[in-house]
Image (cartoon, rainbow, N blue to C red):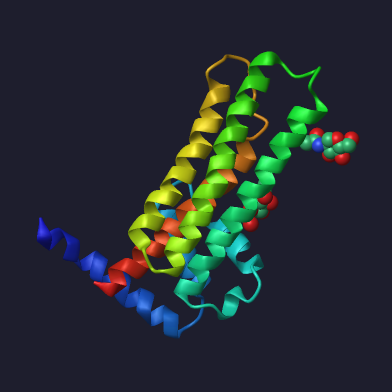
Length: 185
Ligand SMILES: *[C@@H]1O[C@H](CO)[C@@H](O)[C@H](O)[C@H]1NC(C)=O
Ligand SMILES: *[C@@H]1O[C@H](CO)[C@@H](O)[C@H](O)[C@H]1NC(C)=O
């Protein structure tokens, strides 16, 4: 059991990982790892998102982690605002089922804002286990929101892309924290 955690590919991974920190593209390598760990994470999405963050090219891994949490937070805030507008703009036109789903999603995203703020604090204090739990609950919120729309045939979620973006950004943060934690062992 314990030998499997030190499998050659594992060690090889860290060898190349640390090699590349001294070398070039930390963002690319981090995103590569993340997309390998979680099939929901698209390499292109990850690199584009992190590269767009200010000064991310000069950041170390811990800095990148903070940036991805921040991006997640903006995403959540933005999505919550979007849902609010959807509910406001289309009160009459909205299908009652869709409307009730949107209301659920609004609650989920409201809680997710609190969750990601807590995760930010945890991360700052290097309490990675706490941050892990808090970010995982954010990911659960996005899937619960999306699943609501799937419960009824013919209903199309207006939030698929946004749920997906928040999920991916969260997963990227989890990967970064995993790498940091493993390197501390
Ligand atoms: C979420 O973040 C991604 C990457 O930073 C960005 O492309 C997308 O527009 C954001 N979506 C929302 C709803 O904020
Ligand atoms: C809601 O309506 C405002 C004003 O008509 C518009 O600017 C905005 O894009 C709409 N938002 C959504 C989510 O439909």
